[in-house]
Amino acid sequence: MFFEFQNRRITVNMPDRATLETEVLRRFADDEGFALATVNLDHLVKLAQSRVFLEAYAGQDLVVADGRPIVWLSQLAKRPVELMPGSDMVLPLCRLAATAGVPVALVGSTDIALSDAAEALQRQVPGLDLAWCHAPSGVFDPVGEEADMILQTLNEKGIRLCFLALGAPKQEQFAHRGREAAPRVGFASVGAGLDFLGGHQTRAPLWVRRLAMEWLWRALSSPQRMLPRYAKCFAILPGHCIKALRLRARG
Image 1 (cartoon, rainbow, N blue to C red):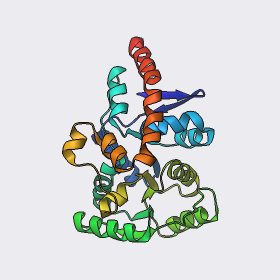
Image 2: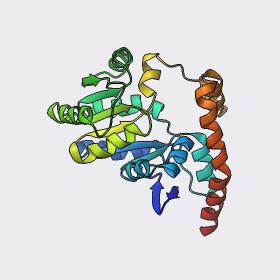
Image 3: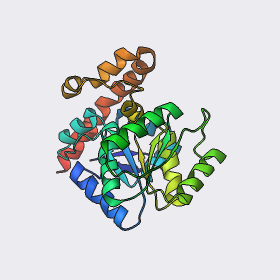
């Protein structure tokens, strides 16, 4: 499944979890980094609006489907992909890191949220080498001096997997830059995943997620922030449905 913007193609190239885990383990074994992005409707809105974000996203090595609308569009196009939200990727990726024996870093959110997330990870993933946690300043710039320091520290500590909880588009821009500045690091952009893990944000109950109503849960929990975002997301759906049908017709 792919999406096109300004003659650039964003492909969901990791169609299921087994494919993703195999590729991540291969990269760990080959001493090769990566940038992992989790595409959703909000990202599609931003990709259409920002050339900088589009360039960063086009530079991601691994892309998974974060959000049921992406999965539904893939099914409509007859190119089905599996739902893999960034929030659900943290524990599985940490287990892969523990299996491979590679150091892990947490970057983003706040000091207390990272501390609680680190405690939860070490409790749930035996053998995890959690080597560094860093909460950037509130004015973090993915191309600024603070970003330089983070990339230098990742290299110095030999980090191989770095979770980014910086929010879009900063986390994807930083990961894109990191592919050149820290080529042995695997960057995984997980948004609020670390906050959920540490209990600093509450995710929708499992039954709500299974009903594909997590968006409504989030909208009701934070209407001023989320309702405008979802309005923009719903506005682009018809156009992407048409594109998916055209892709389906190609066979």
